[in-house]
Length: 167
Image 1: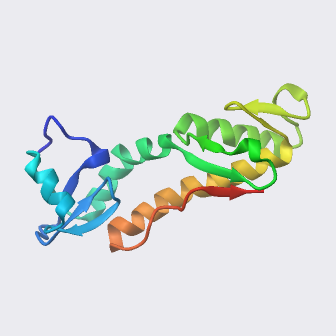
Image 2 (image 1 turned 90 degrees about the horizontal axis):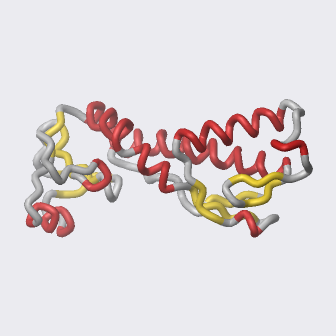
């Protein structure tokens, strides 16, 4: 059952009938039902969703939680070009742009616009800095999916650390 105040970004699930713990999407992990944050959430009039098993929960989170999580972005700290320090969205459109630009650079076609630098999301990149950024973005997105799977399926692990450091 989905309630009118349902949001995948801040919801609790009871998985496979195990009434001793709940999965908390906002905190990305399992917590005992005696958890104070969960109790406050219940006191606000919410009820957890009962879900058949961890695979079904993972499917729901991949569809409903991950897109929003990635859209909030990847925090970047550049040791070589501090002007690149920022949070970059990793929504599907951004991922496609990053992949396309990096593929073009790696194929020897140069930067967008044909210059020695170009602007992406308000920051000036050269070939090397963008390829470093694209590599970090790829690893962050992959790590986000992989980590969420481990957390939901095994109950252990954590989401990729931020900020991500690039040269």
